[in-house]
Length: 138
Image (cartoon, rainbow, N blue to C red; front, top):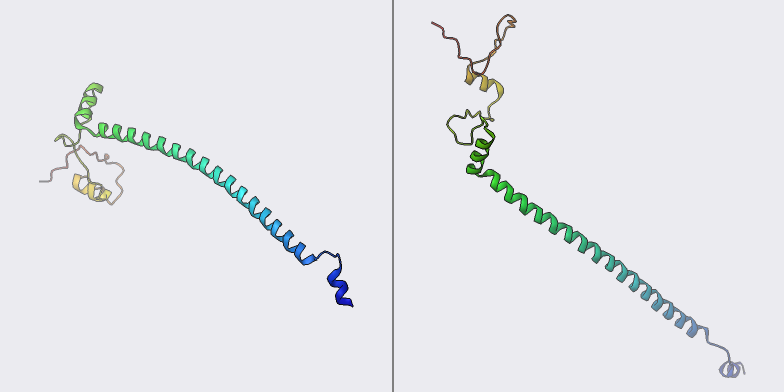
């Protein structure tokens, strides 16, 4: 008799209801996640576009500065600017220029010039200059 009552009762089957509630909540969660993801992608696209515009401005400025640098390296332009400024500087490759190698240390450069400092302290002597001629010993 108990089987007949269970079969003919008007009771709601809870497992079916729970299943449909879980399916509906899962679909709602997926929809919410989808909207959040789309919104995040939209913000990333705007930021990417803004950064791309900034990068284009930087590249344009670099091209301008590169052109200016090439113009500044021109020997003819340099000579013309030195002449306009009435400067005593000489351009690269001029025979009047005295080039010092940077790979030598200070003591080697002083020895080459001929102004090696004395090892003993002699405070009464005059300081050595770069243009002074070395003393001649007979």
